[in-house]
Length: 455
Ligand SMILES: [Zn+2]
Image (cartoon, rainbow, N blue to C red; front, side):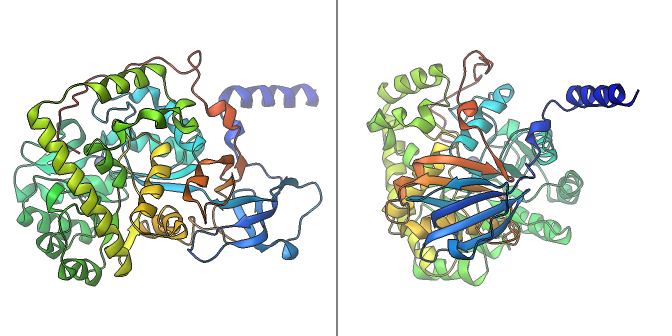
C-alpha cells in the first residue's frame, strides 16, 4: 500500500513541521533589469540582474551577463533598485515600543515588522539571556520566520546594574572568568559590557573574553569614545559617542581597530526631536505593523508636559545628538569601521522603520546615500566578521535581498519604498507580515517608565 504510506508520511510531516514553508525555495529567482546597489559603496550598476538559487546569490552584475534557467521565477524590476537585505546592528528583541516595558510573547509581530521593512539581520545587544538565545536558535533552524539574529545575551554590568533584568552583575573581578565561560558555553556572538563597569573590571573582562575568542562591545553612555575606554582593549562601541571628540580620540579608535555602531535614531528620540511632529506615525512601516494601542500611548507620551528635570535632560540629549552626527562623519572619514544600528525599541524608534530613519540621519550627518547603505549592509557584516557570508550582493553571499521603487542612491528615503523582500532565497509575502489584531496576540507591554534616563 505504498501510496497510502507516503500520504501518511506527508501528513505526519505537515503536523511535525508547521513552518515547513520557511524552507528556501529551490526554484531559481531572477531579478532582471534593476539598478543594482551591491552594498559595497560603489556606484550603482544600471540594467543589472541578480540571480538567486536556494539560499545563495549565484550572480549579481550586468543583466547582459546573466544566465536565466528555464522555469525560473522572473521578477521584472526595470526602474527599480535591488539592494542587500538590511541589518540593524543595535536592537533589543524585547518587543514593546517603550524600550523598557517588555512584550516577549508578541515576538512574531516585531520580527514581522523588521522583515516588512527589509531587515534581514539584527544584532541584539542586550536581552534576557535564555530568551534571546532561544529566539536565535529558532530563527537559525528555520522554525521561526525572523531576520538572522546575532546576540550578546545579557549585558555584563557591575553592582547595581542599570538594567537589572537584562544584565549580569559583577561584584568582583574574581567572578569574571566564570561569567565569560558561561557566555562562551551559551555561544553568544559578542560580549556587551555596560555602564557601571570600572576600567579595571573592563580590562579584565576583555582579557578573559579574548582568551575565549570572544570580543567585547560596550556602552558607557557619555564616556563612549573616551581614550581611557579604548585603552582597556575593547573591540567596539555600541553607540557612536555623544561627547566632543578631538582628532586624537578619533585616531585612538582607528589605531586600535575598534568598530562603532551608530544609533543616531535613539539619540534623536532622547532629544525628543522626532516627537515634535508625529506625522511619521503614518509611515507604512509603522502604521502597517504596530498595534493601535502603542500609537495611542505614544501620542499621549509626545504631548505630555515634561518636568523641569526632564526638560534639561532632553536639552542635553539634543546637544549630544548633534555631536553624535559630527562624530559619525569624522569616524568614517578617519577609516573607522562604522555600522548602522538604532537601539529599537524606544518611543518613536520602531523595530524595522528605525533603520530607514537611521540611514536618513546618516545622510543628514554628511554621508552619501551609498555610504549610509553600506553602513546598513556590508559594514554590518564586517562587524560580525561575516562579510564573506552576507551583507552584499555578490555571488556566494546569502540570498537576502530587497527590491525598492525609486533610487535610494540619490534619495535615501526611497529605501522606504520596499516592494519585495527575499529572506534566505525565499520571497516573502509582505501582506502576511502586517499587524493583524485577529492573529497577533494582544499582549500589553508591562513595566514602562518614560522618565528613565537609561539607554
Ligand atoms: Zn541598546
